[in-house]
Image (cartoon, rainbow, N blue to C red; front, top):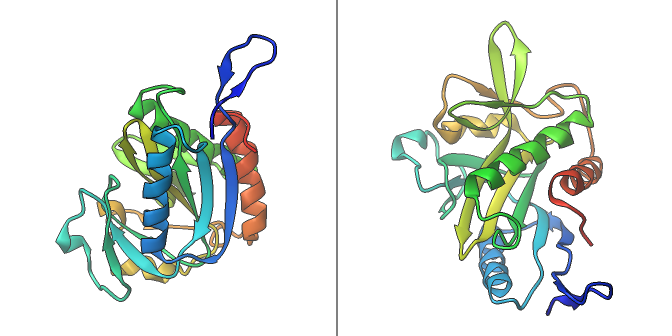
Length: 224
């Protein structure tokens, strides 16, 4: 798809990112193949950017920094992936947001992009009256539970090729938190994992999708 012409200035304006919600449980290899193809098409100017919301069947994924010792119980299929980070769990009840954005036309700064992903998640959670927080040296979004306890509610793992992003974020809506015990999530053993349901907020995935879309527009701009 080619950029459309701006009728007032005559300048070429890139099309808005597509926003897609994929129903059902998407096999992980299928998701990776689709992301790879779309990222290449975006880099070559053949497709618009894409925000793709999915759910996976229960799996563990290993990022580029994953340590074998952090895989405690391989009770589900394990996939090595090119994203940054360590081991994480994906499964039903968790919203995964795959982001295929062109940083060349936004801001060619990967650190700033990760900061924007954090802000997207924080603003999403705020719509449910949940205070999501950053922590120095710990990627992801955290929730203070009191008495010094902190639990992770959302993870971030990205990859950038030719300044086009892929992979993205995962937000725990109502997954089986027991499945995280098969790994050391993101290499951090001294803190736990939580979800909206665990916090007493049994939201539907559709509720979360609406909140994510609102927050995305605030941080990254409009979508179609």
